[in-house]
Image (tube, rainbow, N blue to C red; front, side):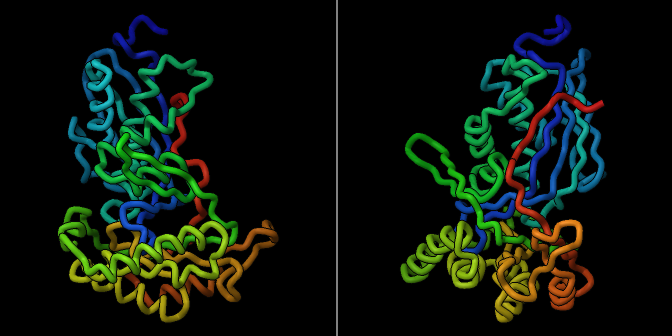
Length: 332
């Protein structure tokens, strides 16, 4: 360990990579989540002068704060304070690819980045063999975020189920079907999670709660091995209908796609629409000469969805990210 490092800090810096996520997936409100193949990256380096420097490129550049209120810095400070250590001077360099305010887990990504970086810097690990204590990162990040549905897939990757027990936040992974292909429809306009949550009622009819609980259970089965059931499994009566005033276009698009047999839902708090495409469905997928055994979402399906959304929406086929958060020594 370098003698120039502050007390309690065992590494000079880390590089963290975190995936976008889609939460709820219809009926799995605040519980189910899916990691997507679109990533933010951050270099976090300790500085000897005690100053904080934040550089941002990509999504949110020129908009997100570049001081101690930056979400990554706030998450790092929470971890350092829990360890009884002051946050040292930092140079934070962010490369953002996850859209902000679209329901794709940008805040969870930032929080997981900060928690991952801070725990690694305090861990005393050999820089050549860095690893994440994923369970600890998940618990700390979920506590900061206040709900676990985006944090869990961001940390663990894949498809996750998260909940709160008497002992605190918990999560488990369920292997998604190899036939599952996510397609995201991202609008130009944004919507804050706070605004979307503010539209939810304090209570819902028992019949709607029972219906949604059954669909959430079915959704786990559909995602993990029976994607032919996804259209029914993604039906929701708990939250999407109440958010219509804030995102009428998202709900219109999701309904029209569902009428065509495509399992479309609002991604997280919206307004992005997520389509869970079944590779076994005729006409929805194709293969390329480079990867003949790997089914991809077809251009025809992308074009069909684009006609539904219009030009102010960006249609992106994505992979499921199986790995979740990743950490290594800083890149030069």
